Image (cartoon, rainbow, N blue to C red; front, side):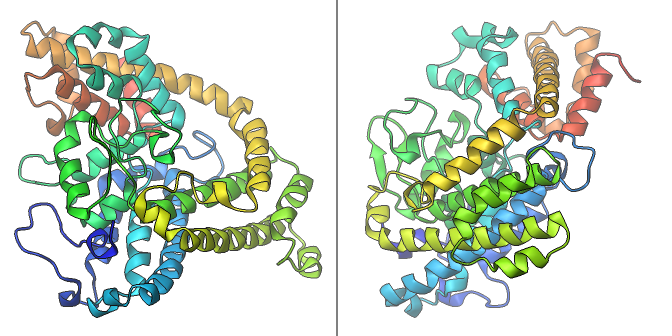
Length: 445
């Protein structure tokens, strides 16, 4: 892979090249990407989607939206720091007009949308959709789908759904948000289809990033960027190098900030913060300043800021030291999995799992989320299929009036009908999913 191709400003439908040197410096194409994401309805829904605590009654806890904004801030710094060195290593990029801010803008845009495809109720929402088709009423459709189509459903993936949201064409709007291909490439942490599942231990095979419904646009993007093909038998590619920085920004934020949320909510004692985070910040902490802070939230914020700074430095150093293998596709782990603080990071994550993700409050609301999502899928998929088959009941007709027009096209393809409903449900915020469920089950009018 080469950087000039990887930094393509091309957008869906372009018939002419977009050279970097011809860009308006006051509003670069990569900045336009960020703006389009921020103004999208899919991004706005993240303000009411779970990050750590579903439907938290406090105003402190992070939502998917605040988490995504913080990831983009870290991602921008990572991109700029890496970009500055890459321009020195590859001076031809400077001649083409690229600056270190371009790298920062690409990573920031890809980072701010990294969770845009996540359904309501956190990662349990993905599992709830999958289990509806694997063990629930959706199992009835298995025989009518290809193996890869069925795998898309039983292993529903927020990353693939995000790519669908960003690129899906509908009447009058071609190419979705029409983002630059460089930004879409950096977004694709797992540039492969759902099968085969985890064929190797390479980081790109951990999950998948494209549904069968988006394979054509996916191939257009990765081929334009010159991303290296990993398998000739299935749709599978090595990562765009900047996807490693997007992943690192997310890893840094959820590791440190979820831990911070747990402390401020009283799920983790402050002593844990000092015991575990001090190992990360021992070389940068000012103990006198730490003890001068009177409030717990200020002390934790101070540790959090130091820890993020340390991990940013680590991620940048590891990326730059391994640039060649990253470009070749032979770098098989995430950046933080190779850092010297891996053990400390794993300790913090383990505490977060035990004290936060498995807390009674989280589990109770995730259980409710499972039921809500299964019921919503069942009502809408059944109604859409009954209408297509010509045997819709009055209830089905009423239900379909609740479904927005863009999600009820009368396609003769069962997979696409089901994916329309999955897309609709996945875009719901937590609260909207609950309200819709109550209406459909007669709990409120």
